[in-house]
Image (cartoon, rainbow over all chains, first blue to last red; front, side):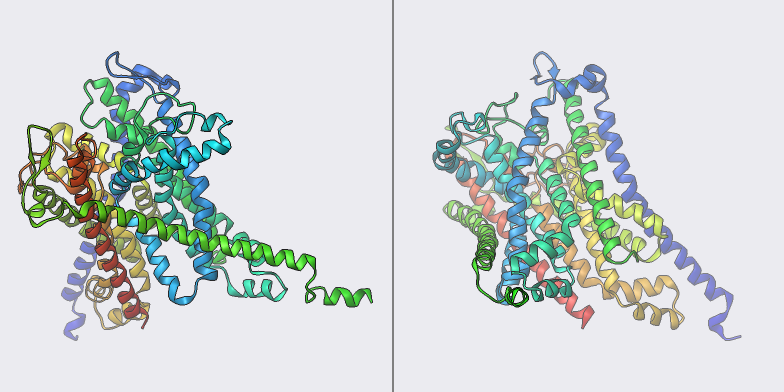
Length: 316
Length: 297
């Protein structure tokens, strides 16, 4: 028998295979266990607050460390409003950027501008927050908010005195953070549209915009929804930049110029100041709500993406 | 006649076609404007950071530790933050890189499909977690019992880096041609040697890309550090069992100070951090292009 086929050699390779399988499998398992551990620890930490306040926590506006009374409503409101405004601005902007990059940009600009947009995503949030409070905030207070007020001042949302901090500057900073994510996913989606469909529309006499509306946007609609939801996930969870610009005030402001706070931002702002067990536990409660939001958002986005891929690769 | 008109309809410039063309032009202009806005935003942010930080930048800014005067002014440099950031990022990479690469090997090469899907979902969920939640998790898992340390902070950063490294490794493993694996197996090499000796070296470029990208990302993270390594002494700390100061945290804390001298330091620290992060993400683009070219060419 040739030496290569002797059982000893085979045993050696089997041990190697099993070892590699076990080691890599353990790492894979660790990745799953990590998610479970995070969920467990966060929920476990919030039990004290949950047993004290129950679901009432979700509808209370108070955050009073002295009296030991805590509620999340103003932060849920702040998170929802800032994220929604951010998405309202970011979605058309990102789709426009992606369309420009796939349909309009000359070849030599395409990669450069694409890279610049991705670089926008690389700016650390703390730097965006720094810029937000020292550059954007004063600009909004002196120019943008009075400008909005002169047109829309009759709406309660634009009624208060312009402010350098508050809901609106936070929403603008979040917009800047979500645009590159939504734009790069949209760009990939648009590139996946079969050229024969686009050529077909153009050959039928459609203008470029009609082709985009009828073919590109129609074909990628579910994917675009997923891209926007991913952007929402980013906006919901951003803590640092929002803490720096939103003003950190409890309560639901009457107008978008008012100060507010989001869940993530409230947790970040309390890192030195949590005094009692109930307060720490209330922060965990906030984190648990945030975790639930982000889980739902991510799973929905993943489901849409998978179904989209499944449909467009013919189910293979 | 009527049929003739219809046939010509597309080629005659009538009012409707003119309107369609105008709509087309407007939409093209709006898309171009959107791209311009994005580029302008990047330029505005980068220019304001560099412009405002420039004056405070000097050699001593990199070599000295912070000093505080009785009048509430800030002096000195950020040597402690730079060293701290380097320690945190290095440790986090050491934690996340092997686990991420091995997980990716398991998912792409070895795992049964259903298990692979579960792990992939777990990685996606980890990637989508708010970073402040990661910070809270490490606070509850490590800091409550053992106190703050650079180790705890880098563990939190590693959780953020893990899905990034694992995903980019998976993507590059998918690009490795099956013929290479088959060649290895056909030569009689066992599976583990084929993977470690043929597949993995071929995908080094992609792994490098993902790791660089992950380092760029975690170097700028603040939220996971707040609860894990924020209460640091203002001197250069080398021991990872102690809490260390870091550049993002310095910016975050200085901006809350009332004195403008702190704001100048915050801008300058921002300039250093931004330069570091942007250079790293440029490097990762370069690595990506190179490894794509190699694998496809």
